[in-house]
Image 1 (spheres, one colour):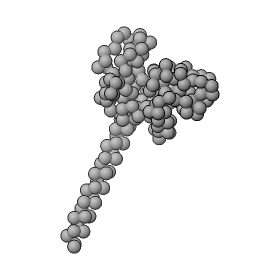
Image 2 (cartoon, one colour; image 1 turned 180 degrees about the horizontal axis):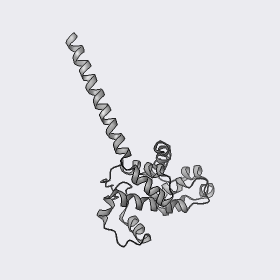
Image 3 (cartoon, rainbow, N blue to C red; image 1 turned 60 degrees about the horizontal axis):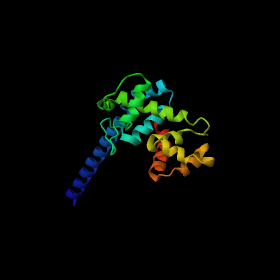
Image 4 (cartoon, one colour; image 1 turned 90 degrees about the vertical axis):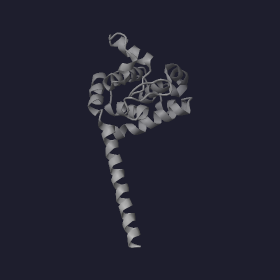
Length: 180
């Protein structure tokens, strides 16, 4: 019986140590891009917590992430979106491999997010509109801007026609304060 308790105590300690190590690893992953996120947020006049919440949702802080539709990097950018950023910043054509670079990916993604936020100055909170555009595209957002949903963010969230996009917007809005 004593031997059994000793094994159980040992297993409990190993489990606790493993849990602590996993927690510490996740903390490092979550914060390793903070300086770049702050720099990017400052450059584009965005809330760093919002950028970080998008990164969390899009890639789980993995710069090598590739989405099902070919989205790349921390902010899961498509090549056309990255090319729009490169053209707007007068950088010339951007090789797709550059989207794996955290700095490039954050800059392009934040630029795209800022552009989307600026398209909704009449809204009580432009973030849901911009996040829906980031996830589902401008054309879909334009279809959902009917009646009160054109300016009221709560009504807009309800009007989002894709359940996955509605969840995406809600998840990021809920996570943003955690990253402040």
